[in-house]
Length: 163
Image (tube, helix red, strand yellow):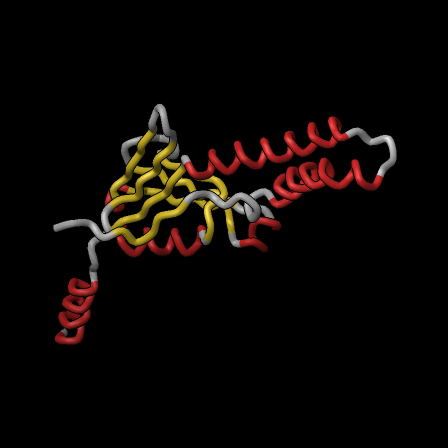
């Protein structure tokens, strides 16, 4: 039986670090606008500002594309890298702890850091920052952490009512 993919995403750029993102965009924009509005501001200096802002955004964007979190019915898989690759997967049945960290600004944008620990390691095996909807992901993983116990709960309830 094949696993069904429930969720797959890359970290968010703007929502995770809106001030850094805005600064990089502002730097690039300043490189374009300042030579027009300030006499004596050279095009070379404007080009340097634009290149710095654009390069910052480009590197950041590529880095986010190289990180993927995938949640299936059985596993959570973290992948990072292009030339060298790091893949870490944790079976939901082995998860012992899920941790979410969010600053106030991250809570407003509904992004955060998701950490997953299994019984096999003392630390966190998967850690991904800037992931959207971390609480929804935690609930999704918890739904598949243990086999459904509704049948045993119903049996337990039925045996109690017979007493």
